[in-house]
Image (cartoon, rainbow, N blue to C red; front, side):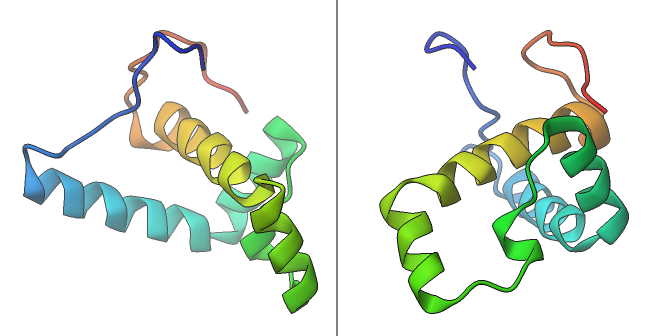
Length: 92
């Protein structure tokens, strides 16, 4: 995502914010969706594997956690939410 692109934000619509958060929680817990995300991006989400406390600290310190979350949200929006606000082709 370039610096000029914006992420979806529902700050002015609390109902949509709740719906979107629920959608992301659901997708993040679906094994099929996690497999499709991994297949499309080559990223195995950190929350889909057991991580030691040290590995978790390293992920946070190196920003791996945030990078994976951003990639997952972009993928989920483009492929499952059904909205492609950035005009990109869907992955996976």
